[in-house]
Amino acid sequence: MSADKPESSFASLFEAEARGPRQKRARAPGLGERCRGEVVQIGRDAVFVEIVAESSVDKRVQAYLQHADVRGADGELTVKVGDVIEAVVVEVRDGELRLGRTMGRPTGVDELATAHAAGLPVEGKVTGVNKGGLEVEIGGARAFCPISQADRGYVADPQELIGRSLLFLVTEFREGGKRIVLSRRAVLEREARERSDEVVKGLAVGAVVRGTVTAVRDFGAFVDLGGVEGLVPNGELSYDRSATAASMLKAGDAVEVQVRELKEGALDKRGEKTLKITLSLKSLASDPWEQVASSAPVGQVLRGQVVRVLDFGAFVRLSPGIEGLLHVSELGGKVAQASDVLKPGETLNVVVRSVDAASRKISLAPAPDGLEVGARATGPLLSVGSTVQATVDRLEPYGVFVQVEGTRGRVGRGLIPNVELGTPRGADNRKLFPLGTKLTAKVLETGDGKLKLSLKAVKDDEERADFDGFRASVESTKLGTLADKLGAMLKKR
Image (cartoon, rainbow, N blue to C red; front, side, top):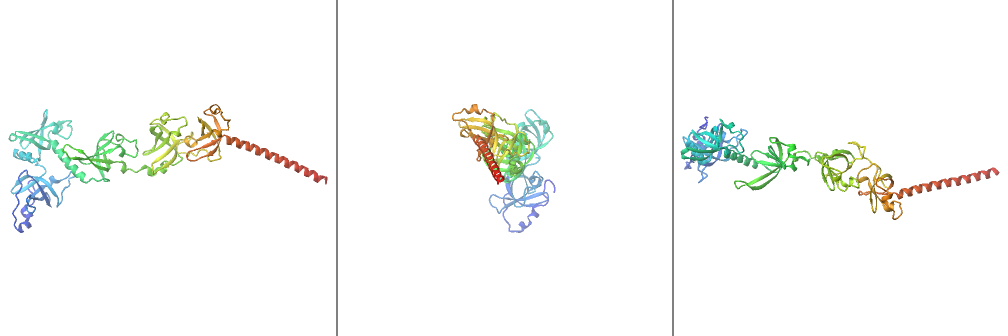
């Protein structure tokens, strides 16, 4: 088939209709008139449609479109039999109507006038550049395209467009074609709207789609889904909360994302509601908390980096997406705020004290000195009745706080109440137990994060041991004397 005429005439195509009852045919639309038609057959080079007349659905006019008018970006046809499409009459020849989405390359100013009236794009060739924009040869006439209308965005080098054949919309047609103003931007924006409408129809929350990163900002990254943009906010980039869009993405990157939210936003320039599309990279990645039992086992020494410091403690990143809290109470009795001893970016060794995977919480403590990453921090036995070595850490009116040797943090910090110090009433504990004093204490109570110790109990144990030893020696002496007497008596007999 030629570019101008379909492969078969409508007489043969609708022969069955001709043999049926004769009907009064509907008025055929004129050149440049917009109409709606139903696809009835797809041929080798053309798509045949029946135009539905406004007055009666039973009165139809036949027309056709060339394949080029209904091909998508991938080269495939975008219509099928039964689809209803909108198009414009771009040619009337020998009683046959050709529809199209564009006028193609016009042959004269009459067709340009028709394209202007119908709002149809036409093809023109850029022949030069002047101070204000592009010079375009179109339909045998000279036309002008302002530089602001040459593209959707800024045109860095207009000279690159010279010699190219592009589609334009005729925005002004005056004086019989002596003054013709064009806009390529209007064509590109119309195409973008049509593509975005198609894309939006296929979007749904949870759908996985591919797109291209168009811009990276402090708050996230914009992704073009094929005519419509969505935003991947920082919180949806990764399970690692310290990740930023700039550290993960750059403009032009191809990405696969999941639709998290579709929400109507503010009105656009056309007065239509915009669609806010929230996308996610994180939802397509594996959740590191599902493997937290193996990546952060309780009792193991890990290397971490401080990512946030608050008054009550510091959050330490153990691995991408996994953070734990190092509470200020684990940093020593004299530390009032975590920021006094820790700074963001600092690295340190910590011990995993507890893991709550359901709540995504990990409790940390400083690792004991001398333990390397990967070691198990067993620490001293802190069971009731055990005797431990401790160092005075803080003094309060009600007692002395100590840190058990071999521990760091809250788990090994305990209180020796005044009544368990074994000192006279009214004694000055600050003079008797200055900071750093080494003590031997007995564990009286554990549990619920509380450790209670006693110096008095150690002294009592020592006195009891001394007394028991003395009594044992006395009893041994008495038994020895009695045995000697019995032996002497037997000898006399």
